[in-house]
Image 1 (spheres, rainbow, N blue to C red):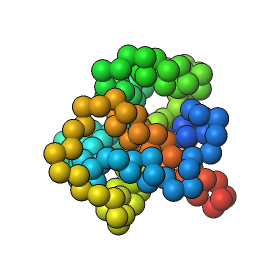
Image 2 (image 1 turned 120 degrees about the vertical axis):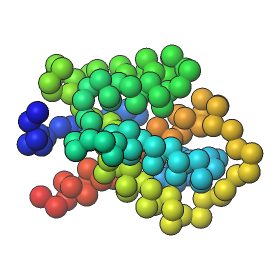
Image 3 (image 1 turned 90 degrees about the horizontal axis):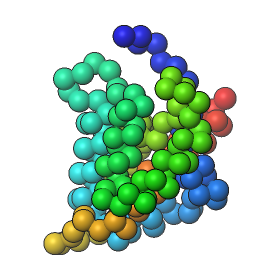
Image 4 (image 1 turned 90 degrees about the vertical axis):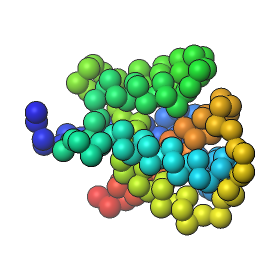
Length: 152
């Protein structure tokens, strides 16, 4: 396995929605229970690099699997989002990333420090909940890639 990192495009909110994310990213997930958000992002972080692995899993297969996870049972949502990702995919070796550990850590820190509500008896089963979490992930991607661009 090649351990040298290679540059890859990280897709953000702008690529999916042709607009800038809201200035208040947390507004995208304001209706989601804080505990559930933390659990989902921590779970994503673990799936990207389980404790049994030395390497982050940024394979195309894993990116597709995570997109399916976040789109849940809504096949139309998955088709809409995968079409955007496909647009930026050159081939099986040159594809963009959506789900990265840097986003997980940044988002976890932001959510933990936020005053988002803990909603008792919250249900994650609604498609809108998963869509809002996905949009939040994309907004964080946009933010962290802008930080990287400004450092260069």
